[in-house]
Every structure is written in structure tokens, then in C-alpha cells.
Amino acid sequence: MTDTADTTSSSWQKRFKKARRKRVKRFGKNLIRGLANFLGRQSLVGDAPVLDSKQFAFLKTFTDDWQAIRSEVTEILKHREAIPVFQDVSPDQMKISKGNNWRTFILFGFGEKLEKNCKQAPVTTRLLEAVPNLQTAWFSILGPGYHIPAHRGVSKGILRAHLGLIIPREAEKCRMRVGDTVNVWRPGEIFVFDDTYEHEVWNDTKEERVILLFDFDRPMKFWGRLVNSSFVRLLKLTAYYQEPKKNMATFEERFEAATRRANENLEKLSDDD
Image (cartoon, rainbow, N blue to C red):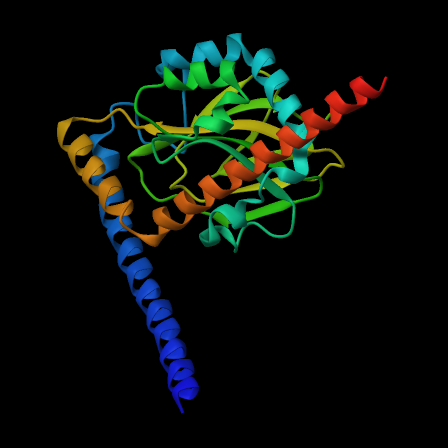
């Protein structure tokens, strides 16, 4: 009798949590739509889908040192299987990230530094730490032949930069649409966009695409900054933030363990020689 009662209670709790999450997401979407127009008017850099990167002086250091960044991610990719797929870090991304096609090596998440991951990329980390109001940063690794469906970001108060690192030779077949604008990644080139505009990605090649992706606060007037910071604090209380935060720590430990085992194996082989 007790087992049956416990099972019924557990089932009810799961249904309740699922329904509550749907209500929170619905409320969040309505709130985001309401804030978007206001934050767009508060912007000091315009409100276009893709913005002129020259408006952000700090981006030059990334294009100057992009080859050093690429060298760091090339080393990280030697342990590719230990890099988590996006949906394992953030379950909310399951609709756009399937299988093993999109991996993410996270350096900063929601303003918090992942110390162990950052040790794997010291040059990249140093450059990211100089970005004003950095929110999130990761190496985005997209498998060949994959299409990321159209989707939208959460807050117009945040802008996103993409730095091309390892790009398929048929670059034109590896592209991203933001609104009505189509962008092609190039090694060492960077562009900035507003991910609240609908965007989608195609990698119609047989090669992997690797970029450095990072988010930072949109330059805005006082009231825009105030409202956006309040919204981000509210977001951090939800499962949208809490689940990835917990998962990021787990995968950071796993990657460190994988690299440690690999180094120990190399040392053992050297000793055997």
C-alpha cells in the first residue's frame, strides 16, 4: 500500500513540476516580448539583427590573436568525446540540438568563470576577461551536415559575438541567417548580432565548424541597463539557469578527468620507451 502511495505521489509531483515549468516558460516568453521593444529603444548601438563590430573596440584583440585561440581549441578537440553536447548541458536546447552534432566547451556561464575549463585556454580566457560585462562564452563545435533550426534568444539586453576559428573549406555552405541577413564565418573574422531575432544555422559540408561564441551586455541608456540587470537576476532563479549551472560543473570535472587520464597515458608510454 505504501509503495503504491509513494508511486502516485512521485507521479503527481512530476506532473506538477512539468506543468509549473510550462507556466514559467510561458510567462517568461510574454515578459521577453514585452521587454524587447523597450530595450531596443534604449540601445546605444542600434537595433539591427547584425551590428557593426567596429562599435566594440574590445573585439580587435580577438581578431589580432585568433590563431592563438584556434591553437587552444585544437588541443581541446583532442578530447572531443569528453566535450558535452549542448542539450546535455542545457535541456532547454533539446529542440535545436540533437544527437552528437553540437558540442559546447564552456568557459564562462551566466557571468561565472569555469576555472578548470579556462585553464585549458589561458589566452582565450585572458581576452574574454577584458570584455565589458561578459555573460557567457564557449567554443561552439558544429558537426558536418547539421542544421540548427530557427530559434530566438532570451534577452535583447545581451549581444552575441562569433569568432571564426576552424571553418570548412566550402565556407559559403556553412552559414547563419539572422533575420533576413545571411552571414558566413571566416577564419579570424568576427561579427556581432542580436540573437532575439530569429536565426538558424546550416553546415552543408563534410567538415566540422568551430567558433568562439560569447555574450556581453548591450550598451544601453541607464533605464535599459537597470531593467536588463533586473531581468537577468530573475532569470538566474529559474530552471533555465539552475540546471545548466549544475550540469556545467559536472562536465567540467569530466573533461579535466579525461585530459588527466590522457596525460598519464602519455607519460606511461614515455616511461616504457
